Length: 449
Image (cartoon, rainbow, N blue to C red; front, side, top):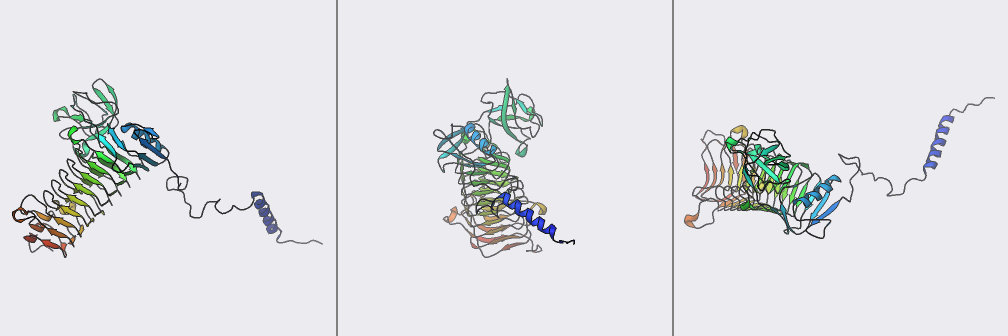
């Protein structure tokens, strides 16, 4: 008699699985296997680690000891080579002959108020022969003060802004120096081409997720020539995406205090920018979604807060912008959809808040100013607390306090809000305005208000 076992294959499979399980041993106890919420990082084949490298730097008694930019850079580069971590800098002054170059995912943390990065005195020389676009060497009339490893900037009368080149000297042959960045323009002897050992004291270029905390930047303005804010500042970012700058002081730099260009999602918190030759805080060149909170910009040569080109969807809140040489806040080219709230704009040289003169397509549309205190601005009578030029639309002004508290003839902020002829529809809500003219609207009646 023949018997048919229809389920034999299934029984054999179950037996095989039992044997495999026995060979593998018991299931892992709690905590030995990966937890269900563990995920690999977006750009690495491992999950987030709780312990990351930390290196201390100091003038003595640290993991790395020294007193200038080289020891700081060595620590940052070492930690960056391990994928990121923290560099902790102790108390004292560090002499900067080149930038401290930030690296991705590295936090640089000073001892708040006690870690000082001081810009070294700068050397300046005219070029002896033309520097050509893309070239990586220059020949100087006077090479004294130019050393291998130093930071350097090169420009001429026609090569300002982003056409200025900033790099590091990598070698020397007589009066000719090589550097690590191609010239961004033709720098012509006929146009007074020059080089100088000027650079940002802290610089982040093409980085992601860097952090700077607790540093004092001493710019040594009197010992240096100016470097423009497109290419430098006490703290400067170019494509420094997601960088956080916190609890830092920048003072006395021959240029801007803090500048970030083409850098999205930058956060600047609890910082001081004071006594710098140009702008206090300078987000620009398409930097989207910046957050600048609880900062002080005081006594800078031009504007306290300067929104440059294409600054959009930003939040500027709880800042104090006082005693700057020109405007407290300046807003212009395509700087749209920003919130400026709860700021103190005090005793600046001209208008408290100034919207620059731009055609409609380039105007700063849909900005909201709410809950600000705009007080005692201007050197000349007729200064406005808020002055709107150009052709912006959708601006909202509400809940602001605009007034001049000075006595009699010393009052210069005599207009609350000045709206000029070409401005589009704006909303002037409930504001507390104390001025000879609360709102001066120069638009023709035909304009849509």
